[in-house]
Length: 213
Image 1 (cartoon, helix red, strand yellow):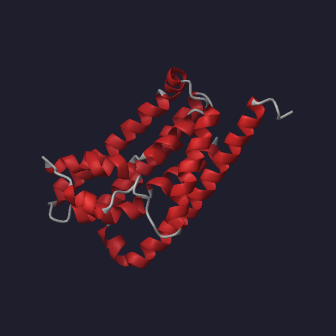
Image 2 (image 1 turned 180 degrees about the vertical axis):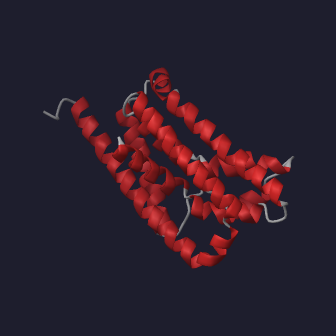
């Protein structure tokens, strides 16, 4: 169980990558007072947590409703995670998980706190890759696996909030070079997680076809 939780946390940390997301948050909120920045950070991580928790709890019902098998989800999640991880290794953040600066600038926020919903919570913290990863891990077992998956994402949300609120000195310290290096390291972790999900999915597909002995 400890290994499962650690793997889930590593996958979430790599695909959401709060270290790389912190400069985006800081640039979006640079003109806001500290209390507003904290409110935006808190709202974004709480919304991200609620989305993932609901999907984890309702995962099997969603599978049954749409006729989705865990094997298919592992294969799909593995492909998504591997592609995003590979692009991060090349020094490029996926536009699916992290919108371009031009897209952020063109977003019309009717309220300052609206940026906590989009693009911060969705898709920066919770994109397709994060959703696929969460549902894959939560659907791989029973209530314990669901709880561990939710707990792992909760830890990620706490780390993200701390970085968002207190990350300015950290970002200045490591600089762009440090962020790029960490981004590529997270890309490697995510690519490995994606490859493992693909292997698990392929093994499940073989068993489903009756070729696994």
